[in-house]
Figure (cartoon, rainbow, N blue to C red):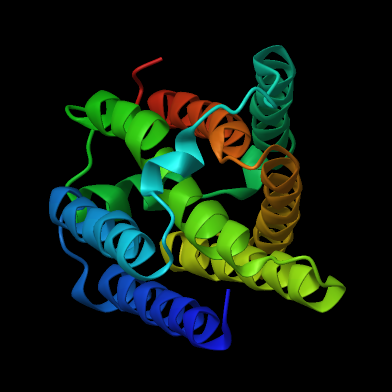
Length: 227
């Protein structure tokens, strides 16, 4: 990858995350509108850039090249699920779930009536979109063979992954829990990058991401009184 291609990826990723951050915190559209915008910004446009300028097919990031052990990924996914549940058990008493429910209902039109549908979308589709953008379009494109470029790719994609999610939960937690969540997302981003670098595909990180989101949705079902 030449310098122009690298600059294009960095410039677009900053614009994309900044735009979605502003939409999340300022425009605050309903969940459907927000999701459509996210699909365009995190999947459609980078997919076009990928195919036109980077000469790599978007679908190649989702291909199992024989290097991914699905059994191992399921076990790691189960670990991610258990970790989220454990965090909920340990820290749940410090979270104001009523305020979160109020914000979801008022700002995003997410409620008990549509939460199951939203949850399925988050697990199946949203996790794939985020993995394509942060691990595929960013990390796998930016990391080259040199040590400096690999370090930058690891740090940049993981940091942007954390900053993007901060726009979602910024008002949900106190300062300590927010800091813990950011550190957790940074660690998860680095771990996901390592798996995908080794396998050359985002399948590994997608499976684990989806499992972690499944635990969050399970907690959400309990929060809305559906489980």
